[in-house]
Length: 158
Image 1 (cartoon, rainbow, N blue to C red):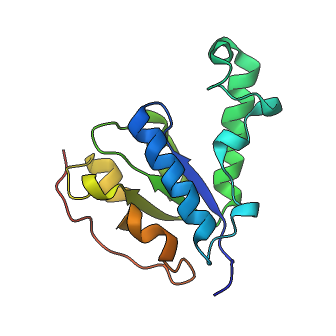
Image 2: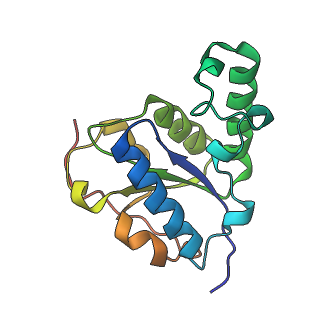
């Protein structure tokens, strides 16, 4: 299989659980033979002037940094082949909702990945409805993104 798909890596990193899922998902996409990680857009690696807000929380008050980082992410969504969302039920990231909406409005394929231990838990109705497919985190490394498909989430909504 060939590394042909670029992804916009949509994932929260604000809690311990989100960080754990983030790290596991990053390793899985590096291991996935159909994802071109080198040319994908990882927002945490593309923050304005290379300044990461997790290392410099004062940037949250900086209009230039915030505007430029937002616009960089917007461009990242529009130039990636698809959006890959790492979704942790009960710890929803509001920014992810915006990213999902942008990707959908641009006609991008949207895959939502849920940690195995949370798969089947209820998720937000809008996140459920906007996604093209849902998989468990353990399936991410082997999923063939050259042949994306549609499937329903195996869980309820709220």
